[in-house]
Image (cartoon, rainbow, N blue to C red; front, top):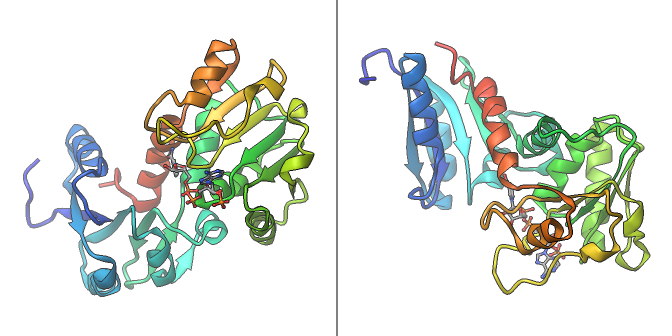
Length: 268
Ligand SMILES: NC(=O)c1ccc[n+]([C@@H]2O[C@H](COP(=O)([O-])OP(=O)(O)OC[C@H]3O[C@@H](n4cnc5c(N)ncnc54)[C@H](OP(=O)(O)O)[C@@H]3O)[C@@H](O)[C@H]2O)c1
C-alpha cells in the first residue's frame, strides 16, 4: 500500500523505538485489508512527549495509536478522558484523537490477559484467583478479572502497601467486592484455581521463582505474564509437574484486536 494524500496516520510513541512490533503488525494488516492507513514509529524522549502529543491534536488525518515504554504513565496525564483500564492503572497503552482534538486513552493489558485466558479454555466462573505482584500489570489484570463471574481475587506483593493500593484503586474504579489484599505469610496457596505471576521475576535467568508450585493444588492453572523467555522458570517447573500453564505472550497477542477497535485502525 502506497502512502497517498488520503492516508490516515497511526503512530506508536516509544523511546527508543527500535524494538517495537506494532508498526509491522498493523501495517501488514492494513495491506491485507487494502485500507489506506499507515502506522509509523515516533521515537520521542520523555521531555518532548507532551509537545509532541499536543501538536498532533490538530492534524486532521491523525487517528491515534499505541504507547509503550517509557511513556505509558505520562501520556495518561495528557488525555482528556480515560477508559476503565486507564483509570485503574493510571497508564495508557492506546489512544485516539477525536475530530475536536480531544485525546482518549485506555489500557488494554487487563482485557488482553483475561480474553487470552478464556480463549485458551480456562473457565473463570466461581474460581478463586491469586495475583502475585502489585505493579501496573497486576492492577490492569485485577481491574478486568473482577468484572468476570469469579468467586474472589486476592493480591499479594513483596511490598504489602502496594497490594493495598491496588485494592483501593480497583475498588474505586469497578465498585467490586471480590477483591482483597493478603499478606504473604497468610497465603493458603492450595485454595486457588489460578495463580498469576505479575511480578517481574522470571525475566532474568537467575531470578528466584515468584512462588513455589509445590504448595499449589494439582488442578491449579499457573499463569505468567512475562513474555521473554516464553517458558519462564515458573512455567517450566509447572509443566514438569504436569500442571496446566498459561503463557505471557497471550496477554499481548489478545489485546491487539481490542486496541485496533479502540483506535479505529481496521476501519477505512
Ligand atoms: N505480557 C504482557 O503483555 C505484559 C504486559 C505488561 C507487563 N508485562 C510484564 O509484567 C511484569 C510486571 O510489569 P509491571 O508493569 O507491573 O511492573 P512494575 O509496575 O514495575 O511492578 C513490578 C512488580 O514486581 C515485583 N517485584 C519486582 N522484583 C521483585 C522481587 N525481587 N521479589 C518480589 N517481587 C518483585 C514488584 O514488587 P514491589 O512492589 O515490592 O517492588 C511489583 O509488584 C514485567 O516483567 C513486564 O515485562 C507483560
